[in-house]
Image 1: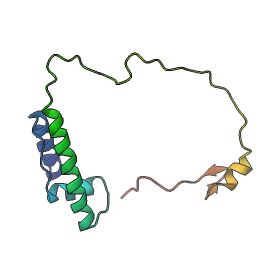
Image 2 (image 1 turned 45 degrees about the horizontal axis):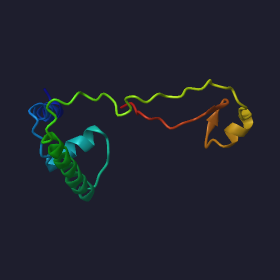
Image 3 (image 1 turned 90 degrees about the vertical axis):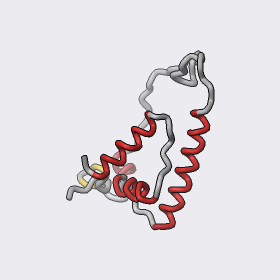
Image 4 (image 1 turned 135 degrees about the horizontal axis):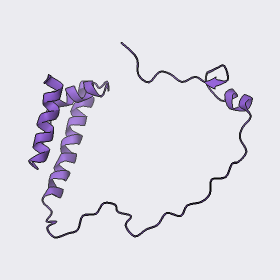
Length: 118
């Protein structure tokens, strides 16, 4: 198991034990690297503080006695969704649509690559 897999293994194990993990700067550094988010040192410190605060709130939720309460799969139980038929409306002419696009090629909107190959 590589170093990144080890961090996730530890986090999952702590969650199973119902003990909220305390994040440290090294874990934040690895998480930002894995998610490909560039953060300055100050931003990582702020992120660390915010995430530890969120985990503290989750820890408080773990202390709530829910013994005997039925599971709630959705907060919308008992509500119904009002469906309507899809109706085809007027569409923009291709030229008008493409005039609003920053870049286009052969009648299609060009978007920047999301995943770059190495």
